[in-house]
Every structure is written in C-alpha cells, then in structure tokens.
Amino acid sequence: MKELKSGIRVALRLWHAIGIVIALVSAIPIISTAQTITGESVKSAVENYITKCVPRSVDAVVEFKDLKRSYAASAKDYSLVVSSTNSVNMRGLVTFLVRVRYQHYNNSETIPVTAEIRTFQNVLVTNQTVQPHCKIESEQVSTVKTESTDLLNPVTDLSQLKHKWTSRWIQSGKALTFDMFDDEPTVKRGDEVMIVVRTKNVVVYEQGNALQDGKLDEIINVVNEYRDNLRARVAGKGEVVLVN
Figure 1 (cartoon, one colour):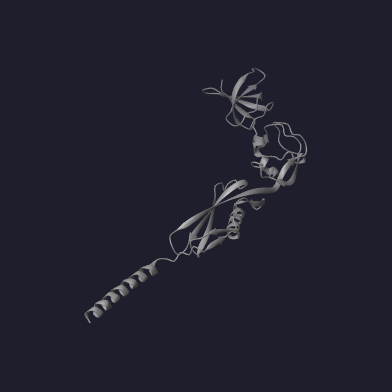
Figure 2: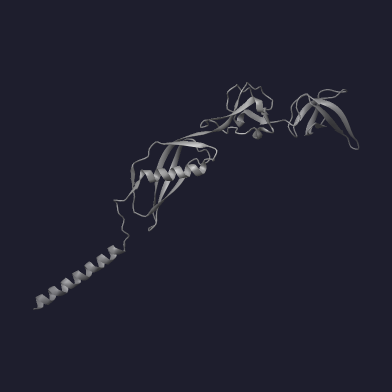
C-alpha cells in the first residue's frame, strides 16, 4: 500500500513537471522554418523603390542579376523595406538592401539584391559642331530620346543653359552634359566697359575695353585710350573698378 501511494506521488510530481514544461514552451513564439519569401515579392519591392527614386521624365529598364526564386523567412508575418547604396544616381549597377521586418517579434534580416538599371530620357543633342566660349542657340540642338545611363547630368532643356557657355569644342551628334559648360562671364573679351577710378575724394569714369573674359569680382586686364595693361575688378555687367 505504501509503495502504491509513493508511486502515485511520483507520478503526480512528474505530471506537474510536464505541465510546467508545456507552459514554458507555449510561451515561446513559434518560428516556422518552412516559411519563404518569394523572389517576385522582393523584385516588386525593389521596382517600387526604383520608381520612387527615378524622375518621371526618365524611363528605367531593370535587369536583376542575382534574384533568387525564394528566400528563407523566420516567420509568416513580415514586411519588406528597401534601401540602396546609391539612391541619388539610380543608374548602372546598383545594390539594394531589402530588409525583412517581422511583426510579432523583434528581429529582422537583410537580403542583398543587385540590378542593372538602364535609363532613357529626352536630352539635347547638337546638330552641328559648336566652338568653345559661346552660348548654345536653339537651331544648334534637337531634343532626342536616347539612353542616358552613361550620361552624367545631361541637359534636357535649353533654359538650363541660360547663363552658361561652352567650355570646349562639342562635335555634332553629341548629347549635351553640364560638364561641357562654364558660367558665362559677366564681362567678355572685347566688351566696352566703364572703368571706375577711385581716389580718396574723387571718382572718375573712363571708357575702355576688356582684354579678357571675367566673372563677377575677378581681376582682368583692360585698356583705355590713355593707358593699356590696366588691372581692374569686374563689378557688374559692363563695369570694372581699377585696382592699380
């Protein structure tokens, strides 16, 4: 009889221990290793991100280089957040980081995805060879839709060149980019200028000519009918101030 009672007590203690273990296990979040993230959902998330980054005037063609058919997921409920190593220049070979964020526990994973992005847009293309140090006129260019993947800062509208002039020879058929231009000088070589001569108590104005191009506040050579090789600071359009 005593042995029976002892056996019952042992069984009850064992049953109680099993109940505690079951309760502890049930409190742990269930993580299913069978869950997956489809490659199509990752692709869609990246494409949406590219669409937001690329201007509406630009068409983008995307080719994924290392997209898998599926990716392992730690849980069923997740969201995808995309970032990029170069969100400013969304062209060429770009690496995206797709962060998998889970809703029911504090954990995340990152899926790297690489894509080749080709861009196409309307740009200005020269109809003729253009020499340095001149403004681009409307008859010298045409608007052409072309691939702009390898074009750094292409010019898309003539109004963007309002205060610019060419810094080099530009061959016919070339797409214009901003590195082909400099700011147009305030005073150009050969311009008639008013030379301001200041002394302690007197300001004298003399007519002269610029011997150099000059931007605002730059020092250039000027000449008048009395003297040559004068040095003057560009003060505005058609006006310089003698500095010697």
